[in-house]
Image (cartoon, rainbow, N blue to C red; front, side, top):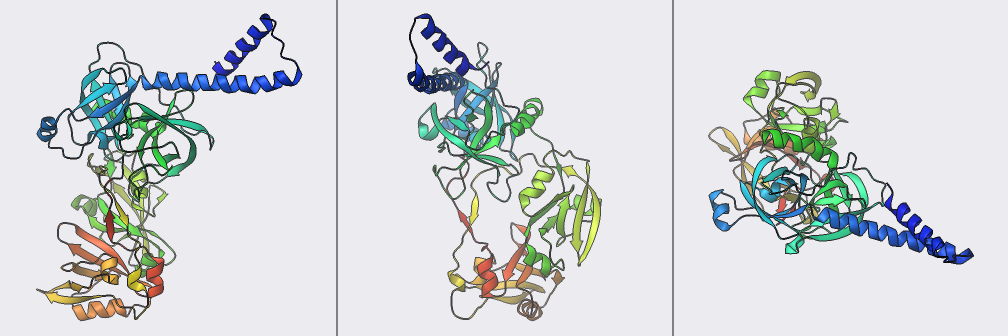
Length: 467
């Protein structure tokens, strides 16, 4: 039923019954104003109705936080998805807490139990024991509205409880970072810390998304808000309610992005993908994956950044067999890999890293890598790394063990450095081992031009990413 048309129809009928004349241009002018007034009333009514299902979520008290071993939960928002007391929110809002305090706009407070969380998608379910059926917000079957469609964000930003901000749909299929496997809705309704877990609703009050983050480069609103699509939440929520977690398949590798320059250095010119940094025992025996393999695709999905691998497996189950395409020693191989069980807490959103873009180390002067290699008990080890050097900017640390250059294992420091400096390519791929982090790959540009074209590998921490 279209309330706008019905309201305007009543207005027009009443005007005619009362004998109010709406002649010519006066009638034409009055009709848009009546429609606008009716639409405003409808929006306000939908928002007020929706706000009754929105909650503020906070740690119960300091003692409860300490008892649960949690130091990160700062609270946020959520909304009721079932009248019995099931509330959908973000996993980072409840962090590691088992219990939280849930407050409604009418002032009622409840003790809530966290009954399910999924770190990969950053969704969680909180259960409260309500004394009566609760107002519910409905997840829309589709989050796709026309660009420019009006939306409203409901939540508790910066302690201002039960606030509403408005905006429009700005875009779809947005990424937060290279790892988070969610294609976000982008909108410009103001979001700030405390909005996390709150609903993004239409003018009719349907939930099209769960507000989760602003870009990692900022702390507060800059007109870019990111929301988890309702379709994804509708798939994840029942699993969290039934099992408390989402059991997925895992390839059993740790990987990082390998662009065309890295791929060429590994013998795969013209390609890009993910380079395998580490392989679990299960994956190596199940399918023969090896450190240094270039992953091109999994399950038919092309891979360019880490989130592509996570998204390829987002709906998989342990034991599923997936088709994997890799390049090894310059040859393309097709493998069939049975998946192992994923860690349901892997990928939890917390503090996030972004890449620094300070390129002062390549400006002017002669191009030097800024590190030395030394022999240490038969191992090639990274020695002193100069401050602000290319080696430091692109992720090398003193004490790293150098295992291979461009996929070739080298045990002599002089030979390893000769292989790096003597390469005719723009990039050398260094396989290193770092205490506490295992094996990883560093793409080291070998010319000033290559360095200017690549993002440095120095992480810069921001105090907050998800809201």
